[in-house]
Length: 376
Image (cartoon, rainbow, N blue to C red; front, top):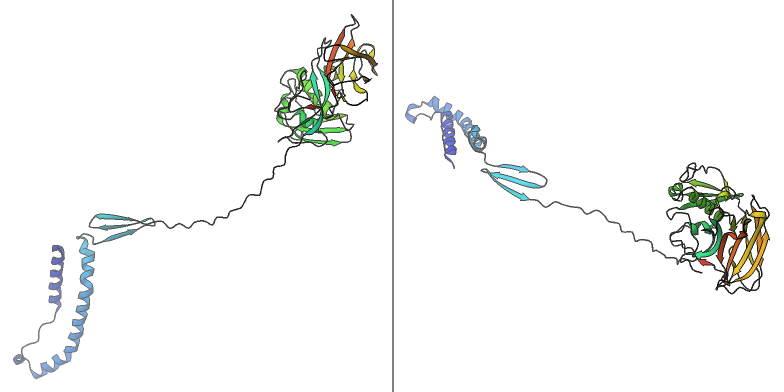
């Protein structure tokens, strides 16, 4: 017990003594009457003494705890959620309490099994571009090619596989042919109604070919002729994200209406070929297309692997000398598969072959060109 506590105990004892009743007089000083009164008061004193004992037992600790504002605190306890801090005589002890964590219920879903379907080759007819020999106009020629390609992750547009191939990543064409459709152009969807095909493109389509106005015209011709190669369709409507195209390419062309095969004819070679040059057996090879040549006369040569002209012919287009007409050849020649067909017109000035289109013949090869590798 500290000195402060000793002092408080002494002060409390003095106060209790002062409150105690006077002791009874000696027997010789008390009369009979006083003894009788004293006898009557004794139970009251007993009760008062018991009450003092109770007050003493409860009061001393209370006074010690309060300390009258002068003593030091006995104990202070502060409790938080994460830890318990106990301060005893200004010394602090921190006891970490491990947090109680309830693990959330975990539901495990097994992924559905992935089935890989092997990619299958798809057949397609597309229009490629060729720079003609001895060009009179300087415009590129459109030539139809038949072949196969591996769709891979590319979307397939049923009935319009040529468009899928023309915009497929990694498209490879045979030597001497190119495409003006940029590799980042994608087709989102193709729908057909009556005689019109609607082709929905991505925004890269709006930039055009990236090689100027003639390249933009050539790109559009490739897409239009490829989309209408089969099914008897006559025109194409281009949209981007479902919206009509009002500004296309380097010159901001308005393509909001249907675009027919004749929309950009002035920007193609005077001789073009619509039929893929493939054949087999004893059947004649069909060579057909459209031209705008002098006197509507279209000429044809077959050249063998050694560069020798082994067959010649000519046909008359349905229109010529300032108008476009259709032509067709039935070439009855014993092809062996290494020949090239040349289609052109003779210059009115010197008779030289002009705007010559050269196409390798794929004989006895029904699959055609491999557009994934550029070979037959």
